[in-house]
Length: 293
Image (cartoon, rainbow, N blue to C red; front, side, top):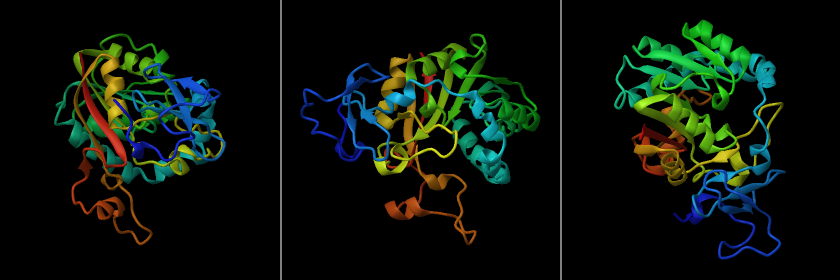
């Protein structure tokens, strides 16, 4: 699959060929040498012409740091608690979409469960819920809020056993993995045969390097390591042994955002002249449902 020009903005060199001295990095998804694009700031983002994945090679080489829990437990994630009602509405929006593929009553595992709002809403809706969370403080909060088991640790190395869930949910989590393959392989391992993986991640096809790619982190929080578009997410899922059932994008407006006057924010819907909340390629977030093959 070739990468379309709009996937990211201007590259360091034309795509027709790399300079002899150009630095390339192996794509963490497909292994193809990928050259650097202009990302702004101090970050060095590479884009794979073969599968379309964007990635930060230096960040990919760093291990996730559970000591960030001090940040998450303090100011960094307090906004999530203050916005609890909005997080619950977002959870119900995701559950309505998920329910079209996985009925209530099945075992559900959420990876990167944060404070536990989605877990709590899933439990209330009838799913047999459990979670995994890297940050110790957040894992404890999720246990208290949702009243369900939450394992603390890195998902790829977690001791969850095999075939422990019929559904695995990852809402804006995979972009922080060091590589798609180990993350998706672990998701496949914990799924029962025929189980479903539900993913949501920022749509890099709409994001410019001056935006999420060129941003700089404040404090100890990591920026995303991986940048997917619908095509690159499909490729990664298929390579990991999943059959992609559905893959589209969802607009920012699907989630609970409000303007300063309290009115609902509808920026992207106005921009595209649409009234629905999803689109094959133009929404700010890519989402996919895939079945363990």
